[in-house]
Length: 125
Image (cartoon, rainbow, N blue to C red):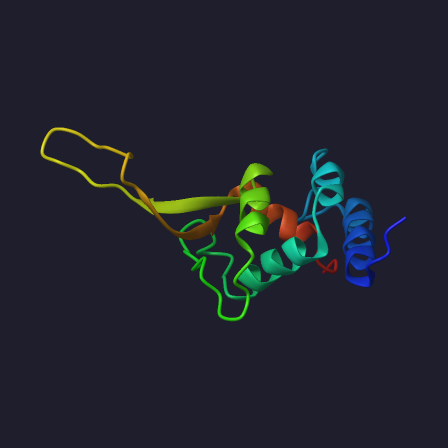
């Protein structure tokens, strides 16, 4: 029931990986997550994944400012809401306290769930 060709491909990969089932396990939440993604959000995840190595996905920070894509903040909010990405922020500190009142969002990074999701929605190995 998906109109977008790239989203259809993600659904096909999700099903194929469910049958292959060795290295990439399909979590029960993945179909629901995929159904809540817009094509632009999935493409943004793929873009971040293309610039991330399997060894550094929990540490690699991606800028939230992308040239020519000014309005992707709502896409990032949805990806964070779904648990696929986390915002990274600076937190002002003093000698005896940490305050997030003046925290600044500096980027995003994958969660383990997000990394597994992207890999599961990719072509099976």
